[in-house]
Amino acid sequence: MIPQVCPMCFGVLKPIETKFKICPCGFQICHWCLGKILHEGNCCPECKRPYSKRVIHMVDNSSDSQNSEGCSYNSDRERHGRELSAEKIQYLQNIRIIQKNLVYIIGLAPSLANESLLRSYSFFGKYGKIKKIILNSNPELVEKVHSCCAYITFESSEEACRCILAVDGCILKGSQIRASFGTTKYCNFFLRGIQCTNSECMYLHYMAKEEDCFTKKEMQERQSEFYYRTHPNMSARSTPVVLKSLDSLPLPPDSPGSRQRRSHM
Image (cartoon, one colour):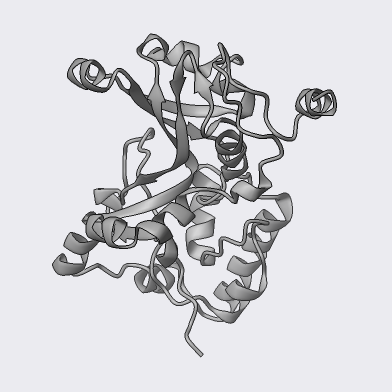
């Protein structure tokens, strides 16, 4: 049986660490990394949910139990202090990881290249809490393709999925927009085993699932698989794509207003 490894520190998980499910999303990490997260921010690195009080209580009890068995903090820390080889770091620096709470939007009309506007409820604010928006409105690109693109980071993967299902293929302000999960990279500090001091760093600080990782070459050679991984199940779309030009984005598929509108179609 292949041992389960902590995606944040690469240490092999102990039996007690695999049995206790610490988050509904299934992201499992070792108790040492969990204790560090509880001290720094108390949110799951994968889905951003706050950890429950029972998880905090479990970690406290686990620490007491380990100390009684002669497991010191330093020996446990040493187990998690492994360093990646230079070759492995170089390889991982070229990996692109599908980030399930990040939405990549292309085809936005140049008139919409405004962060405050895109955050508003008339546009992407209706799909969930937005953490960050990065706009690519390079004048040369806009002049060439008459559109701009945006990376929108939501609080959760559910909100990002809701956004994609609602807006992909819609015509907004006369321009058809396409939406998919965006990609990110590993934080260089994380790869070198150094604590990242950038509180707003949007890169990954844990090892991603293998199926979500692609090199640039693989993104081209495995286009069908990459498309499948970056687009939520489009059969789950509860409303047809709106082909007429809109001045604002449609409601989320699961909203009462959206259901009421469909009942009158």
